[in-house]
Image (cartoon, rainbow, N blue to C red; front, top):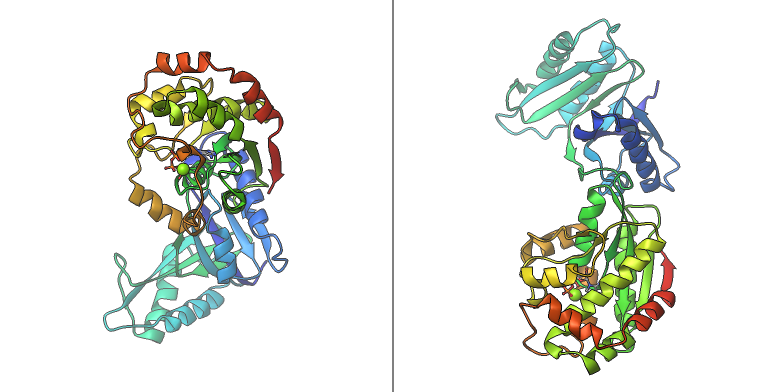
Amino acid sequence: MFIGHGVVLRVGELFLKGKNRYIFEQALERNVRRALEGRDDVQVKPVHGRIFVLGAADEDLLGRLRWVFGISSMSTAVFCEKSIEEITAHAVKMGKDHPARAGDTFRIAARRSDKNFDHNSTEIGRIVGAAVAEATGLGVDLERPTLRIGVEVGVSWTFLWTEQRPGPGGLPVGTSGRATLLLSGGIDSPVAGHLLQKRGLELVGVYFHAFPYTGDGAKNKVIDLSRALARRQKGFRLYVVPFTEIQELLRDRADAAYLVLLYRRAMIRIAQKIAGRERITALATGESLGQVASQTLTNLGVVQDVATMPILRPLIGFDKAETIELARKIGTYEISILPHDDCCSLFVPKHPETKGHIPKATAMEAGIDLQPLLEKAFETAELLKI
Ligand code: ATP
Ligand code: MG
């Protein structure tokens, strides 16, 4: 039986029920192990729908686990011998360590899954609670205590905890399949990627690079953003697609008001080819309804028109302020706001079309020999393994 400090990871309830439970648990365990790589002082042990990290309980560990999707909450814990005396001693210590203010209260929340243990959960609560009350002078409040001391007596472990931090929730990355994320250096698309990873998707990134209009700085930003997303999954494949020739051809031959829409349609076509090569069946973008001219409902339709696979847009209902808030929280904001050139604003007039017409877009493309350039961009895309 393990004795010492550890972290208890609780798992979202939802997916624990169906027949996929096993797959989710395995994926989560794998992702936890990956997040803890290099921490050779701890052991990862899945136990009945939870995961114990045994051997330490420090901020580095909690930080590493912060974005492991599928964890609903986590607690640092003390694992001890399975005896009521040991449990009581630890609980009393926790009570004394609590920085008590006037009027503070506590409760013991005991759970016993080892039916052979001498005391049931009510008795544990009573015995341990009496000792803590006597040692600390804290009153008992079963409803809204300021200090909750959790006690769990299992078959092969006993532990106590006081704090429960929320985990990131979601589903373990990898359990929902994969999507191809159109990743620019902006604020939105990395946040979109984060939300999709949260729902269990693994991502492959595609970045359209208009060198020299968009310089190495822009590309490096996308690489840094990919690194941030890569921390939540096993490796991150980023395709850097040369986009300059396509944009120049469109600039020379198409109606300027339609340029962004035509860029986007070209991006979707190339991204789909890449998805095909990767055996992926969905695309994803950071688009949000009405945020800019190219993201009106009509124009989303003009872009969607060339897609043969679903385009996931997790930010569709987000206000910019909400996206920024989340970007800050996940640490991509600081990278995204570094100055960079955006290929979609190249050659674009002040007043682009907000109500694009699909037949018009199609007609403009029909007059241009775009296909060979799309092929070429796809063929010459650079694959970076991050
Ligand atoms: P972002 O902050 O993600 O760039 P945005 O609000 O600036 O989004 P747009 O620039 O219009 O919006 O782009 C909308 C979406 O199109 C982006 O979220 C991204 O998914 C995709 N996209 C735009 N430019 C590129 C690019 N150069 N490479 C890859 N994807 C892109
Ligand atoms: Mg952008």
